[in-house]
Amino acid sequence: MARKFLYVMAFLVVLVIAGAIALSIWGNDLVRLSLVPGEAFRPQPSLASRAYDGQRLWLARPGIANDPARWTPPGYSPAATPGPAAVFFIHPTSYISAVGAGHWNASLDDRDTNDRAALFLRGQASAFNAVGEIWAPRYRQATFGAFLSDRTDAERALGLAYGDVEAAFDAFLRQVGPDRPIILAGHSQGALHLTRLLRDRVARDPALARRIVAAYVVGWPVSRTTDLPRLGLPECARADQSGCILSWQSYAEPADPSLVSDTYDRTTGFTGAPRKGTPMICTNPLTGTPDAAAPATANLGTLYPAKDLATAAITAGAVPARCANGFLLIGAGPDVGPYVLPGNNYHVYDYSLFWANVRADAARRLAAFR
Image 1 (tube, rainbow, N blue to C red):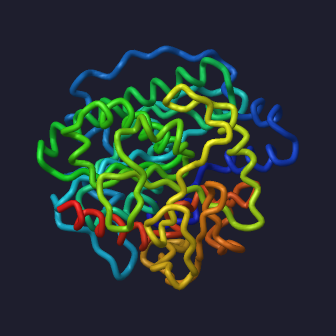
Image 2: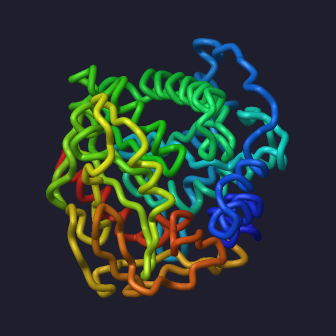
């Protein structure tokens, strides 16, 4: 596992990359044929109310041996357990159903899916391990193809996945206690589930909202006008602000974010109003502020690929960033690995491009909170 590290860190699997390339060349029909499950959605019972109280259904949490979220590159170290804060991290899609077949949702015990999710935790969630312990649940995530379909089955698959995330969050709250500061973070599908968690739980519970240091909704679009008013927290306006939401989606230039923006324009926000034409939250992780620009010299460290953990490198000053039309543009784009998606989309690397800045941002917001 360790020897695979960051070249497959954000490994959405060869099928995901192949599907994205096919999308840019042959269009949506071919990709749907390849990656959308051929079967009907299979309803599954909810997990037992205390299913997440033990360690079995967690990829990372206190007490787990070889916890992937506690990995750090040379020169960094995780906080002592338990640490001042508790971090709830929802990993991105690591399950790809078989071509033209497969299931709408992953099994909780799928070894390959869980191994890939653990790699995500090393490359993404590890940015938060200086501020406290990280809790990252396994969940019956929707397959990648669910994001390429407008079938009711896709919505049901995402709903099943969210039910697991919410059950894990309940267990997390029970076990970290009533007073710990909380950081919420996710990426891609995990960030989508995080927006629902903010809407359903944080926005409806003022006491819980007061405990949130920050929510990192990364790699998923959030409308300032049709989503944010229902999420229970404001957008982060200052680098030293706590109790707020950050979000970004990374593209090299020239950027073509139409695959995201076209879908965004067809959807409805949490307020019930269309998202089309509404501004997205864009936080520059180099400054911690919205709609900002910063040179590469402001980048404290990009996490570069390596063939094993011991040689993973943090390189400062390599990647600039600026917000434009709701997307985060990073100049020509560094060579951080082979998984850049069509349109110069660095989605896979949203965290690793700014790993050291995210780490500093979380520490700064926790200090402001305390």
